[in-house]
Length: 145
Image (cartoon, rainbow, N blue to C red; front, side, top):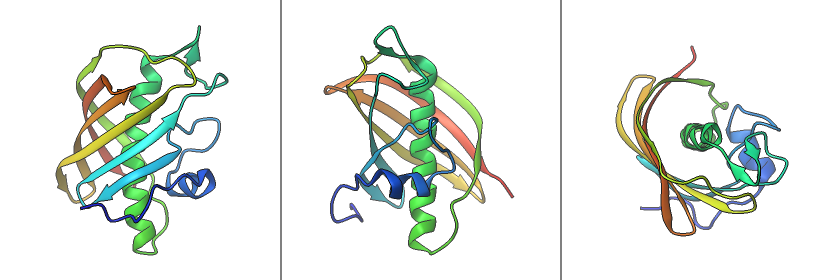
């Protein structure tokens, strides 16, 4: 069940929920949030660090997935009135990138929490663009102490 009433597109608010800062922010909207799932959005701008030759490259797709995980943790902590947590990628497995999206396209990234033990989280992540699955991965993250 979606716990937000409407899509959140306030870039400043979203920026406060993740530890990354400009120009390294790869999420700009929040469509869905529940205890074990989040759906984020990101519109690729021409000046993005990972945009080259009119395309958003592999590292950007992986960073977008990781920042969607961070957004889930950040929004969870926001609801609990806690500070934004800092985390690290522990492992990336089963990564498939089917297509690179063009600039000015919007990514829709879905992260589903598979396992969470203490401060370590294993997720399944998918990225869609124009209704097509363009990337997926399993990512393990750990929160800093």
